[in-house]
Length: 390
Image 1 (cartoon, rainbow, N blue to C red):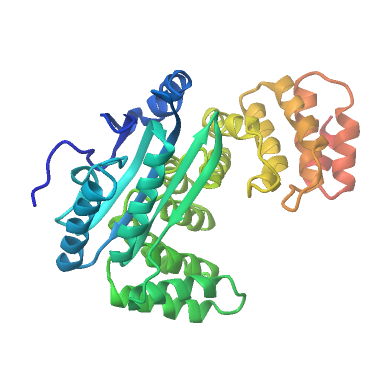
Image 2 (image 1 turned 180 degrees about the vertical axis):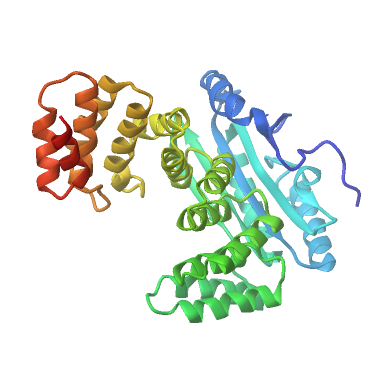
């Protein structure tokens, strides 16, 4: 069994028109090509002959642990692909399997015109393959006119000790006060299989909760070493670095998280929002404005975890505009933030009023003293100082 060189390398992305052709783009070009140029292309290709087709996206990584498990899975994959599915699968074995690490890896496969049959066959094949895996997961999306119409999350659920220890530890994380038990279960998963990237990532999360920051950094870094294409450990490590006030390091990790996720995932927008906040802390106003402009333009549904952060994001966008001396635009951003419904994660009202008053003052608008007075009455010492200075 020899690996061919026709498949995408790590750090590359595959774009396809159905199962017939394949074009590989470097990761550095993915966002420009994959989400702008390919979107235009997709609008013109919605039918393959008389069969309606859809844009589909696949991303994930699976570990099989041993050469025996890997070879058995690989042989069965090729047999089923040829005999069950007549090769109507949206990727080829030589493109995704790595016999040196006994793993399967698709950083991002974007198929511009896949039929329902090809989608179904590919999902069924992934569900079959995952039975042999000991760690990892896959996500898949079917998209029509920019909206997700089908979504699949596929992960190992066998009775293997490493699999069950990980699943148990992940469930324990959800229960308050059981962090130590979760830690032990996740450590068992790692002991059973040392390349369990997701177990390291979840253990890093628990260490963060327990304020074991150096241990959390270690776990997130180990997860990244094993699977550098997953966004979650970069996000986790960035949040620890923010606690440590390492905003430069956090911004770098968040950039990796953005590049390893897609706009269909809440994590993509979470990473961009927090990255914008890091740039504010570093007074890198142009970079902060760039990130937060996109976040504030996004229309989040109430079910999206980013929905409750809209007010804070708009407030910080105003701060970035203020730093760029776009004072009138900053006033508009602060007004929009104040007009938004309260959410569970709001910025203190005094801070809203403080910065709105500063923007109004610099934009030459009347009424800034009244706004500062309101801020001072709500406890803003800086607003009180500014009032005394004018």
